[in-house]
Image (cartoon, rainbow, N blue to C red):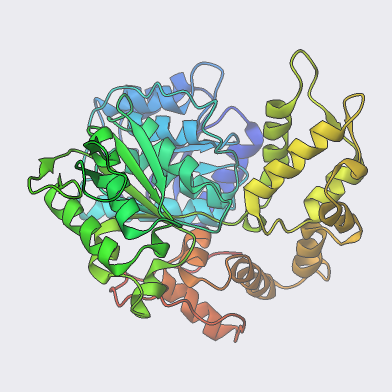
Length: 480
């Protein structure tokens, strides 16, 4: 590999090619840009390419076809897909066909540079392991309910796609209404267990006896009302997936029982003496931070680590800039009357939806639009169709106006712009350094150094931000 990495850019949009040629060249890369998939395959076949940036959709076949064509001959070549249509389907297809990564449009050139550096440096040290072959994904996405193209949702899609390729336990965290069960079902639908049962249970509000009987089953006479032997959800979900919601509400005694099942792969019905082996993938969820509960002594640490082999943290709706419009279109399509056109929102209603913070997250937006469609007349949704608390938000400045004013209204220097942008991302992520680092594609210690450099002050550091792990070598800071 040469000292100046050679990047192949494939995109049918001339403006994208020019932007990437200029931006990557200024950051130490040598760039060859082409406009079709055929040209990309020819250039890649000639050799000497260190990484590929390809659009997903091009006139003669896009990035997915390019990945498929090159993986047989270049299994270790980093191929990063670009798309303006970020979705779970794109993430799953990209991962299943062997793409190294993908990034949503529009993007900052600094994010592309950081991504390329990471893959190029990793390739220098050792060849990236070839992606395991798997059957093409055919799951139906029309009912997944996962909608959005924000940076945070792109990250969620990538984690879902990666989790679907494994049988490891998954812990999904996030506020109520963010779609934890939808994510769990998507993992199941795209996994090798898709043809087997997906069962879910809400652990809150059930006593230990009822919860254990629901999950593990019971024998006749095990407790009052147990008139016959009954299999539990673990047995019913054999070969499939079991989703356990609201785990934070469970007792230490139940947590111990669940841990035994996860470790042994065997369940014992309440009142029985014999165990039964089951093959079930467990996905847990909580709207409370289980790590905080472990620290406070209110949740078993061993169960937490057993559950969180893979972790997915769902962002609240207020941190998903731009997704409200997409979600609104999705729900209006779902709730429209049969054989009727999709209802239209007045500009006043659009302004109110954009300005409202949605403390109830996607579920609140869904219920508000269900109500709006029911109250609409003539296919038009006015401000009066929205709940009063949302309608009252139309006179508040929108988030977009606020961001523009804070970032560029006074034409700041690049250093000042960097400081403001970092402050904005930290505020949007609730001063969670880990999530801010992921959004900016920087390591957490770089984030901490930038906070100290600019003397930024806001929320206290989250306990999970720094876990004592050694960070990789420092990368150049470039977030402007």
